[in-house]
Image (tube, rainbow, N blue to C red; front, side, top):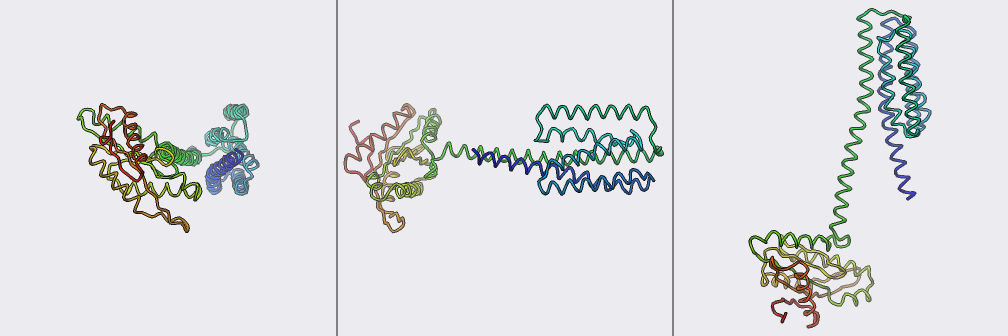
Length: 360
């Protein structure tokens, strides 16, 4: 639990560093470009203001690199608020620097160190400050009266800088959404795999093989065709576990699963039924053909030595084969194969037994 919390904390810090770096870098670039603009407009106060702004924003970037987010946030937001107020005072509302107050609003809600009440209070403060600046600009004359076309040009650049900052945020969150969606898809894929696959052998598990048998019944309901299933079991597996240990027993199960898959046909479904038992579904397959597939698997298992460490392990398996039709229930079909397997075990193991050879 602690480890999971640490991972979330580190991920949160990484996201915060990324978004603050992107937005402050965009702000730094815009303010740096404003220096020659106001030199050209001959507004010395704004030149000095933007020099201090670039220094403040650069300092914020350095602080973020050192993961000192709170002072970086204070300096960055303080600079933007101060810049908006002084710009309105010196060159008027028409310069567009009041947009900075709007740009700050989403950052307040991104800030993870405040609760929702504090965030609402801070955003309300920005709105009130915006209104105060608006009425201040209406009731007073700016220190510098710019020509109309110069003021329009300044407004366009200011609006562009605001859009640039918003674009940096939007790009970050678009990438974040894409990463989250990709992570969710991967997590869902893994969950689906865990729900469908036996973790030891990577074969289908019991739930999936039952579903596939049901699908096979539905698929062949109209055509009236048959299918077969094979229930198999490793002979004397308990003795093997007692002799070599459960870890070796698990490795044997993995090796057997590979042998069975290799010996079956394309379209056949091999699943781990439980313990040392395996269930194989053979679609559109009659009893005799299923018997031949089971015999091929039996021979492959018997003739394939399993080398683990210094041990040369030889095993055999018993197979019970049952032909199923659409009238046969899934549980009944599995019971038929299990009954055939039981007869094979009782008869001496290492055998393939077909149900129609029995007095069932």
